[in-house]
Each structure stands twice: as structure tokens, then as C-alpha cells.
Length: 376
Image 1: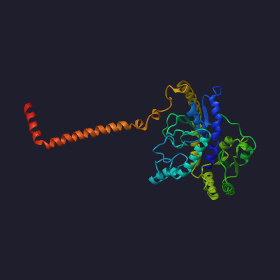
Image 2: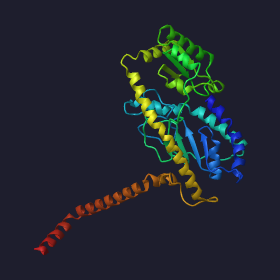
Image 3: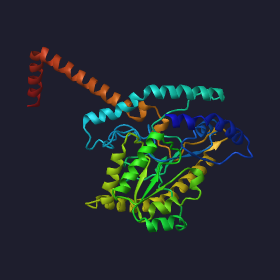
Image 4: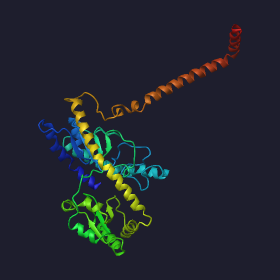
């Protein structure tokens, strides 16, 4: 949660700088394309109806839920990405994750509301299972668990450059002399404690001593990454294995050494086969950045013709109708109610007729005989 507080602390400042730009007709943008941390953009959408496209690195939590995917993306227990092979106990544990985190979430929510109030924002943004803005996910099915998505949520990743410059020094000569290099990239904003850093270093030294790897390239912060050729190093065939941030900090140096050994030895060739599969899928999926650009363009065109000042002339073309309806109507509960009442009335009438007929069976028998006699 510490990183969440860090990024959200800029929310009020971002809102205060963004609002004057949008209020001025000369500088008002046609669309806001922002990172998922920029919650101030949602307030601009809410207040000024400026179309919004938000980029997420993975499937957003609490959005587009699926009954066969337990828990929330990014907060799931190992081995339970879907309910297909998960036990009932594991599925229950996945649902309890957010309940366990509820006190921390409530504290964060209260802190956020106070910050918003100080900035003059005294309302809560609507929360819904489907967004009213465009969500672009810098990931792809295969890395993400496949599921049904509404039109306003689109996986368009991995978003890669069309081409990358070739390897230069010192990376070229280093990889040439160290064909079993481990590449360590922990993300843009990760901050390791001294203890975790020591565990990483010791684990890599153990792996080098055991002959699993013979070199390490450690991707550093922004200043260092300006000179780093991250993609070229990552995709080079001489990069034997990679360590990235996976939210797992409860590890030991021995475990790290063991896992590096499993990857590098790859006795059955399964890791290499899966890497090849993922590489080809990612290359095909990377073309979908064009789809992301098309969706942004479509959103701009739709918004230009959809509003007359503050009056909405028609709904969004990519928004499903259930987002503009009550849950009672969207889930057809009114039809279920009509069917239930109709069935109840018919059942009641049938029971009343049966009871009357049985209570007056002598009269009924005489009436039936009389009717049959007339037919003869």
C-alpha cells in the first residue's frame, strides 16, 4: 500500500494543474490518454465530459468480473488463476483476500477523500463493474487469463516500438563473453530493502558458483535506463534467464539459486518451449497497438458528435446498454417477477378450481354426465 499512497499523493496536484487547462477553450484537449495511476483524469471526465482513455499494465481489479475467475487480478493465491482446477477452499481463500485487506482499504479511502476535499472535489466517483471510459490493457491473453470483456476494455499489448537499435557496448561484448547471462529487471518504481537486496545478490552469487549462470545485467532506475538497451538485452539469445518483479518478497537465496538452476538446466525443454510459445504469441499480439489507436480515434469522433454543450444527445457507441439501466432491469429481474407472479396466479387458480371441483364432486359428476348425454 505504500506505493499506492505515494502515487495517489500527486492526485490533488494533478487535478489542480489539469482543471485550468480543460476549462480554457483554447487549451481544452480532445481526449485524455493517461496512466492508470492518474485518477484526476476521471474527475475531468466526470466534470467536463472530456473523453478518457486509461492504460493499465494488467487486467484491472474490480472491473469486468467473471464467475470462473476467483478473487481479483493481481491479488490471487498461487495456482488459482481460474476455478477450473481450484478447490472450493482455495476459491474461498481468494475471495477472502479483499476482506482481509478491508481495514487497509478503508484507511486508504478515508485518506484519499480528505485529500480530494482539500482540492475542492467533494463527491465520490461512481464505481461500476464496467467503465464509462476506454480501458487499454498493455497485456494480452495468454499472459492474462482469457475472459469476456465489454467493448470499452481492450487488451492491446504488449505495446512495443516498431524497431530497436542494435546492441552497443558494453552490452554486446559482455553478452559475447557471458552466454549464460541473467537479466534482472524489477520494474520502474520498485524499492528493495537492504535485506531483500542481499538475498538477491547472494542467490545470484550462488547460481554463478554452481555454474548455472556466468554473468548478470541488473536494470537500474530512470537515469541509468536512458543508456540501457533493455529490450535488446531481454530478447538476446545469450540472455539465459530473467528475474522480474512478481510481488514475491518472501524468498530465500537458496530458493533463488534453485529456481535459476531449474530454468537454466531445463532438462525436459519445457521452459524453452513455453518461452517460444509466449514469444510468438506476444509478437502477434503486439500488432494490436494499432487497435488501441483505432479505439482512441473512434472515441474522439463519438464524443465530438455526442455532446451539445453539457447536453448528451446519445449514449456512447462502445458502452453496453446495461450500464445505463438499473440492475433490476438489466438483469431482467422484472421479467422474472412477472413470470413468478403469473405462475403463482395460475397455480392459485388451478388449486382453487381443483378444490371447488373436489368439494362439489357430486354436482360436477352430474354436470359431466349431462354434457356427455347432450353430445350423444
